[in-house]
Length: 344
Image (cartoon, rainbow, N blue to C red):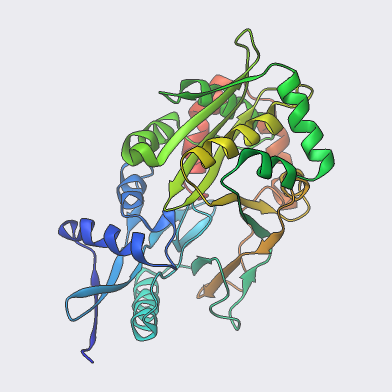
């Protein structure tokens, strides 16, 4: 068997990289090469994409992004703004070679830590972040079967949204989504990602990214979700709701309509995405009959004694969150992207 060669990605590798990602069982939507340009162009982060070849064929890939911030530290992560990451590849020697190369790169860059956002455990001896779980479930090719699979109380909420005469539509732009999303995150005291990021997602991923928005029968905006598609999976990823959405069951209706949309597209796996343990979104997804699966976010610490806690659950951010909630939305939307680009 020929030797494994590890080297940095170059632009001429793009098509081969994505061909490998779509064929590799370990790869996710976030391993697609388009994220490299988004990280550089939208967030101005330095990328370190590595690939491993054997006999001229790509056998493993590792997307890495370097984030350096005076507030949140200096790290290399696979992958910021993504729920999944780490090495994709079934060739054990290639995977090991890529991780070894990543460690050398991280130490040379002088980062505080290297983070892999794995779906499953790879390094049980490493410190890990135990805060996050994901929710993934197989769906049927029949709407009624999927409706009956929803637990009774949650099914009643979906039917409430239907009885309220709510409407859903696939949007051609990010305008309505961003209005709901930015207001929603402000109410929760967290900075919003820039609108240009969502516009870029729609442009870059084309048919593999869309936005569904729910309104009342007379057109009032209630709820919206930006969704990714990968192979036979659907991944609702960014969302926003109006304050009136809860009473009208708009959020429940939205995800039911999205499930129906997924069936029409031929999707088999509904990936409800990441949630923090014990939060409202965590409970909401469990109510749909989805079971939480712990995510293995593993850390190689170089200049830290413990795993960083750069998330809203950290008590040290409580005062900041309370202050942020009081900002006018125009001010928050101007300042937010400056802060959030370094959180990832």
